[in-house]
Each structure stands twice: as structure tokens, then as C-alpha cells.
Length: 549
Image 1: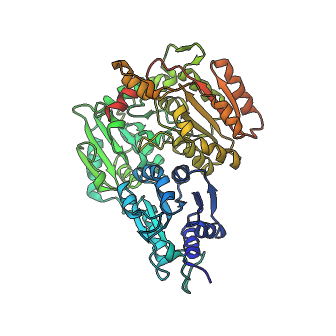
Image 2: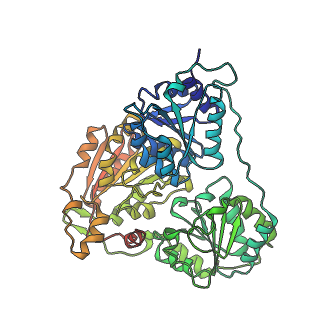
């Protein structure tokens, strides 16, 4: 007879969860094996924190829900940072955690309180009778409401015999929330703002990464003459469009910032228009009309006052507004001069700079421009947090919004490598690129073994300044001692070789020939680039970042 644990595992797969990441212990052994038996792919990580971030990235880049499986107590606490990032990012993720309910157990912690504290939705399998229904409710909440759900599976319940009934591996009907059609009064408010604009800019965020959103927004923007930009997390959404400004906010190029700040109408599409995307509001002109479109009413005006808040699905609202606007009547912001300027100057690599470096150090801009030219265009880039992060984010082009994995809602250092693993598994058709600082690389080094074991043809680029560079540049100018944030030089290339990587140390542009050789070769082992970068000056976006602290 099957146990509840086995039925739960099969039911998760029946609900459409086909990938599960984790570290298996005694408490989650049976349920994880049940998922594998039902057809899910299990990816073993070396640390639960890495597993959580892999699952998060997989869900973001695949557009499908993923699962994380962890041991009771310490397995969950090990995963908390990754779980927090996923919750803050509204990633559809089910965290399946064994649960020790006896207070006398060494593994006992208040797992419901932990989930609540970091913004996840706590749920529980309470009995054999309700197990399948409760699994379906957990997945429906994750997918339908875009939430990270902690599904607790008590040890005494999972060992109980399952009751006769439906499921054990077959499809499970989910009570998904349907997206409502665009309300007429909401469409009218949006259209009125668009008709009154002479220099409109659309800024698309996480909520605009769904199917059909790009086409709907591009068609509407053409009707009203709008320029197109994204938040960092939606980078790539308008790749190739001649009116795209790329990313708005702290990462914006000088031209992009100039054009956004010159807009008389800014429309945030599934975008919070927060301090990062709008540089604490400085990219919004004093007389600009600000419109925010979001499916979640509570998101409207959450980060700044808006002139018009519109409740609705991005694609549905854009299509309805397009139908209400006459075709080809507005030039708007799409002048010949702006098109020429965007083609020539909107990319950061087109902004002139004087290379830093010398003494065995390469300018990170020089490094990243060269990598952008060397690496295949079909890529998926995952970026860790740190002083370096603007360089790969803005100097490495990506083909679309599924080419950039930006796990930065919690701003934690150390998630980049695991993000790249999850993204690589979600997009096996693309070259995975992990961009890390030396601090994040060493934090996540255990997962180098996971990259090698899975045979991922990944390029790991470490911007190595032998320091926590953000703190060096933030506190150094005021004369503070920096011994706590500087470290001796570490041979990360040697470490990577120990895990089975090919590796190269880069101190000057000529050293990148080894990267070109790897790209042209069979790529039978992943490649780590230990780039000894110049760190004399802070990155351009760093001052903006510290304004948010």
C-alpha cells in the first residue's frame, strides 16, 4: 500500500511540477523518490540554499512551476535565503519540506512562522484523506497567484497509509484563477492618458514577461509613439526593437536616462516603478503623467504616487488599448533624431571610456565587451550581487527576456552560480553564463561540483577584485579601515580545475584567447574565467544602490 508521502509526490507531478531541486535527507527521501518515479527530474544540489535558487531560476526561465525538496528543520533553514528571494520575486515555487511536529525533536522549528517571516505562503498536508486536494491547492496558489508556497509534510502524516482514491500520478485538476477581461472603464482611463501624451515611455517589468506581452506592448507603443524600456528583471523583453532603451533605472545608459526623464507620460506595465527602476523618482519629470498597470490592485502606487492606476493583465490591457486607438496617427517620441541616437548611443558599450587597469588588472568594461563578442548570442546570463554586477548586466546582450536571470529582489550575494544552473536547465538550447564576484563565487563554490556533474557547458566569469568591492568603494572615501572587506589573492582558476572545470586567469585582453578557444572547441567541460579586474573606481550604479539602504 502507498504512503501519503508517495501520493503527495505523485500528485505534485500530476499538477504539472516536472522539475524538483533539493538535498535529500531522511525526512524527504520517500516523497522525492515518489516524484522521480512519477516522471519528475530531480536535480541534487550540494546545499539547500543552492537548490532553492536553482528552483527559483528554473521557474523564472522556463515559465513553469518548480519544486524544492528539503529535510525537516535544518534543511529548510539552510534554504531560507533562496526561499526569500523567490518569495520577494513572486516566483511560482512549491517548497516541499518535511516537518517534525514534536517539540522534543532536534529538528523541530516553527516552519509556518519561518515561511510567513520571509513572505512565503505556508500550507500543510494534514491527512491522508485530504492530501491530494491540499497538494493541488498548493500548486494552484503558486501558479495562479505567483507565490512561493511552503508545503509542510509532517513526518507522522507522510508515513500513514494512503486512502483508496484517485490520483497517484495522474493529472490533477487545479483551481486556477482566471485572468479577468479588461474592464471598459479601466481601458478608457489608460487610453485617455495615451491620447494626451507627446513623449510617452513604456517601462515593462516582471508582470510583462508572459506569453504575448511583448507583441501587445510593441503594437500599442507603435500606435502612440512610445519608446520602450524595461526594469532590470525584464531585460531583453524588447531586444532588437529599434525603439528600445534597454533597462531603465540605475543600470540605464546616459541616453536612456535622458530620454526616460524627458517623457511626459510613463506607463509601468507589470512594473513597480520603484527606486531602482526610476532612480528614486529622479527619472520622472515633475510634470509627467505616471500610469501603472498591474493585475494586483495592491501593487498600484505601492512605491510611488501614480496619476492613474489601472487594474488588469498586461497583455489584455495593451490589446484593448490598441483596439481603442487609431492606427498610425501619433509620432510621439519616435522622431528621426531619437531613432538615430538610440542606434548609436543607447548601449553602454557605445559610451566612450578610458580603460583602467595595469599592474595585472583588466578593466571590467574591456573584459565584458570582449566576452560579449566572443560568446554565442544565444545565451542565458545569470548575475550575482556586488560592485561588479552592472558590467555583465549591461554589457552582455541577451536575445530576449528568457536570456537574463536576475535574482536580486533580496540583494543577497552568493546566488549567482545556482541561478545559472537553474537557468541552464530551463534553457538547454542556450549557452549559460554565470557572472559572479569573487565573494559570491566563494560563497557558492560547492555548486561548481553540480555544474560539472550535470555536464553543463557553462561559462563562469568571476570579476575578481579580492574584496567586497561595494563596501570598499562606499566606506573607503571616508577614510574607514577596510581590512574587514579585503582579502588575499585567491587562485579561483585552480579551485575550479579541482571541480573538473577548464579554467583561465585573465589579467589582460590577450588572455581571452583561451575563452575563444573554448568556445570553438567541444566544450566537454565547463569553463571558469578568473578575471583579475581593476577596482580603482566604483561602478557607475553603485552610488544609486547605496541610496536604497
